[in-house]
Length: 123
Image (cartoon, rainbow, N blue to C red; front, side, top):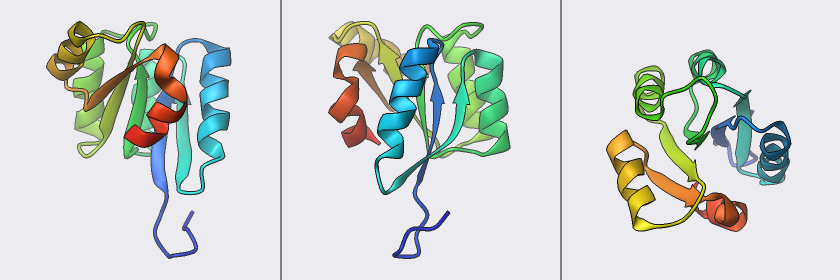
């Protein structure tokens, strides 16, 4: 898909284990003109398969994604999509989560209660 200015939208993979939360986030992102959700995943293996099928620009990743070990999953995502920015969703906001996200190789972290507009600014 190309935008009217000839550029392609930011391609996003949403990897969140909770079906309703993932669906809500996909709907929110789909309303943005310059963003395109190119993959969805409910667990670690599905996230890797989606990243391989269509390497995203951004991965929105639940730190509690089922069947996944956070740092290992992020490393594998970066092998499949080296330029992808991983935004790690955490249960709370705090410096310890920022440090954890950085150690894991994520570009940023957001707590679940700040996902709405804050996420749009990070993408």
